[in-house]
Image (tube, rainbow, N blue to C red; front, side, top):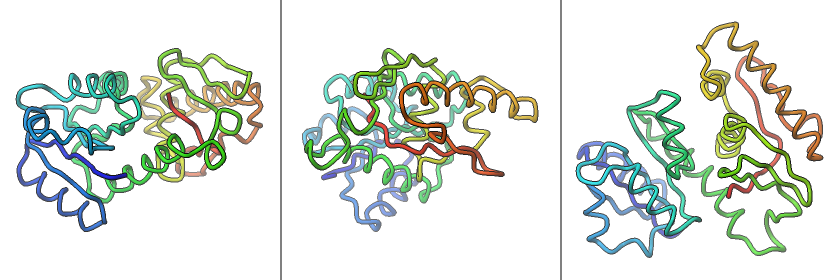
Length: 233
């Protein structure tokens, strides 16, 4: 990944994240607004954008839609103080690969970037060296479909977002509370039981696709882990 653009209007946070990511070995360019980023003419060099949603001028959602249309393969990590289910869903529909509620710890952001970089590597590798249509399922977020070879299964919107969320997470692991939110559930014992039923249904769809009964496994006391790589389109 050649360059990361950090678009954040909070000066101190922008400087902190810029320094942290630079020390981690990434080439980072920082901007206080979308307009500043566009005026810099840095777009051609950028492979991943860390994008705050509440920006002066053009907001993050609008800019994410434009960038995703211009470059479907670019990585987009959204950060926002808006963490409700409808708001996160809106972020993903606007083009986010990963949506992180604020306040974001630098270490968590770094882990998200590394996880996304691995997914982007899969997308950009040549056919004999990475995940291809025959070796890794393809998740279509427009149609909510998962395809493996000639087989396709229809997913619900929440199921598609869950697979994407786990595939982009470190180790493809997601905590219970995070997955509950995709079904609009309160975080309590009843919601956890509801989640378990829904995961069973999702696992059945994955079995039908040929991914096996252990395609999603339980991590006791934590959540679930996806046991296969996914190409997101």
